[in-house]
Image 1 (cartoon, rainbow, N blue to C red):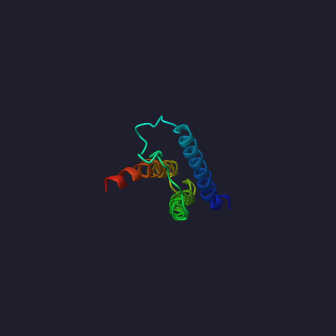
Image 2: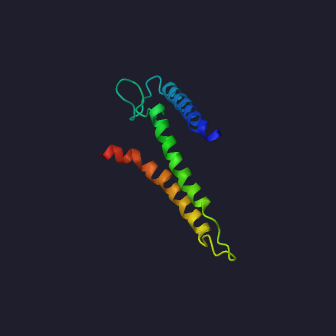
Image 3: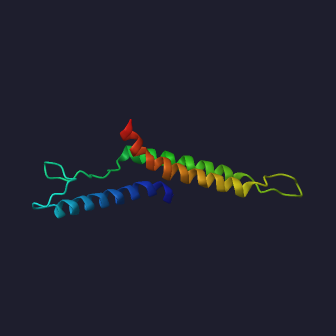
Length: 119
């Protein structure tokens, strides 16, 4: 049950931290000390990302995909020499699955915003 509330809870925390950093950035830039990254109307360009309900739904589906892949690998039994059933490569399958999930989350997920800017 805790996984159901994990994404909305962390999204709210991220949104609160984003708002706090924006308000502190704006208060730091008050006066005549505008940096080169500020826009002409007096607000900073780095607005951050607000995680809305649609983005939370996409994150839920991504989480489910990784969870299902890992559960399928966990369901494979270890090799039993007496019955001859199972897989001798279960540790390697778990390691490859974990590496694949970590790669897709961090590398592909991190590159998404850069790729969207280029398109």
